[in-house]
Image (cartoon, rainbow over all chains, first blue to last red; front, top):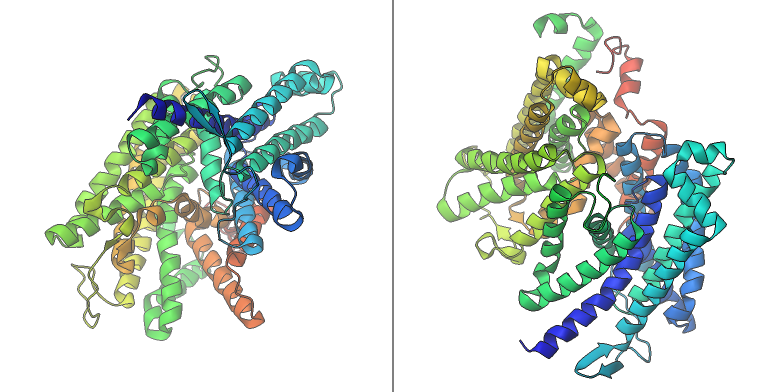
Length: 291
Length: 334
């Protein structure tokens, strides 16, 4: 194995890791505020991927240009899901929430199976096979674009929560629910908005993934688990943790694929998940005691 | 136990006796297809009862019970294929292996106080880890699968679990009866009260002097061991094993459906749920066939919709309503 090969693999893993991170960020945002664990996260991502595929196939529209449209669609779906289905469950026992969202995930997977069929469907843009050469590095254009856009969207999201009035109001709900209600914040609205923002994030991530990998309904559970691994490793509820976790998982999976065999790479991620759950449940980058 | 049975009204005893008679004579009456449907329902009733111990009684949400099914199935099948050890003996190492896995998961989780969603994710992680691991073990067939030799099924060989569906039916029926009896004994026992105390409020249970670590460990290990027996039966009934199918997360979710639909933490919930789902599934298949649609996924979509409806409007499952209907609810949740 040459040094250049390793560097190329790490770069590829890093860029894909950024897209994974964006997807996981949506999960982290939703959990951080509403304390709802979105078991349908990967399925929503695949829905966005299929939306991108359909828009490309039917109308020849570029997935990256279409990502705001898909994100808007997912925003509406997320808002409706929280407002009409999940909201009554916020005060219910944890296992009832899990089962509700598992059922939503199950419904989405099979709904997509009926509508789109079981075949893997990909997108071939005119830049699909292009690559950039930077010194010894050869970077796929699709991965580079997807990674960079992920970073930009993640930064926008962080900025929104840090500086905008709505973002601050949502954080207030996360920090102190009763206090947020006392000062007159419309908590049900803000919860739905949070779920919608998380879903829109997934919408963008799905569009970006659609130019990197093929969409298929069975990808849903895999992506859900991947998002879970990333947020747990990074620290559930921590946004920067999710970003770092995504990059870490992306790079380590790429390296595992290089050093061992590609089929073993997710075993490494699950091993890491077990280790983090046991040794450091607040996540590698989370604050201690934030359990 | 006898005393509490005597407290039941006569009509309930009569209904139970009739149901028992119907189940015991079913293979003589129904055709092969219906028998296979009941057989699957019995399987889900059994593993559901096992899962109910850890979730329904102890309140620990395991989403990785496919791990125990798979370990039991693979262990017994591999011993049979590679060493000629009959499953009647192979079931012991299978149970021991699954119990050990459950003990490791439980010890890690409960020693480090992992609960709620973290526990659920830990169980998924172990099941998925094992799935990928088994995909790389050539001795167990890896991704190509492990196959049991299929012989002609004119005679029933109980020791080797080679025989007709009727034989598997009675084996599963016995397991279901045994699991209901065990669950009944468990819930009436001191340990059963400890388990429910842990479920309701862990801190309060600990403050009252219950060794919550020990109690949760017993629940997880017992549940894992029971589930693995279901896996052994499954392996010898279907004769083929694939890691991505046996250990898959969809399998773990299948296991939790029946107890949730029937009623979490109730004695008859898993049984009622398994049969309700079986009837619903068959009804759907019939309707779809009659209407000429055969798209993959419709049945699962309806399952999912029903699960949403049940968890929204009947979070306690079907059994509490049925119990109220036959006025069996005086002793609290049954």
